[in-house]
Length: 296
Ligand code: GLU
Image 1: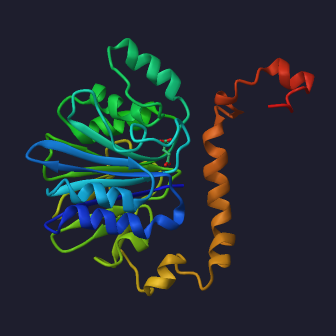
Image 2: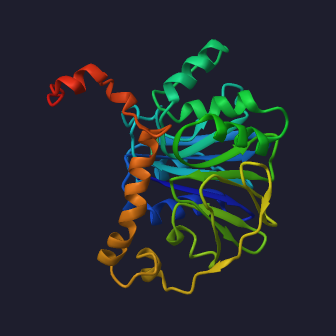
């Protein structure tokens, strides 16, 4: 589990992203990074290691901008290093993506995209998302992300910025948590409430296979059919320490209540067309039938 934050508004953007990521440190991570939209360009700063290392790097960068996304990574595909850290950028440099989760069919998608001339820089499953959005992009970033969501299998929370949309960013989720924070002329996304509680207590809880288009004025949620979804604002009236416990009185109670969704998120990506698939392990039916698979 890692963390995602996103911000659009007039505050100092790298501080808001960094503060948010710090509040998500409890989720565990091995690297961190941010992407900020500035003058129709995307500036990325990312690094292996703790947020303190990122913070140090940011001191030399003097980044400002109106919209940005941030990420703490817990590596699943590719070792923790600077290149594999998120955000990942599309080949044309117009799209940056942060991703929490696992893309199960990334090998198939990588082969497809390589055949179309895309070049991969990292070993991550996530990089296919950045290139796939570029491939699907025909002038409408929301549609491009929706089509990409239809192409990928697995679990994801996503934050996406695109240079053609300097006053907007897009987020989406399936089987990984994501909330939208609604502020006053500023808006947020985050993997969990504590990341934004300092700025707002009004949130939308995104549901599976939903996508949200976020400007400083508001957030519009859509389903994968492109239909607008009405969502009630959830007002968080817990104090900060309860928010860290998801509103539960004790962490143990939170962990007990989290179990069904955690088990679902772990198992779901491995069930495809009613079959259990362990693609990455490369276990043949033969091996399983022989019962000789226990030595890895
Ligand atoms: N699977 C992605 C990676 O290895 C994202 C991992 C995460 O959720 O942090 O980069």
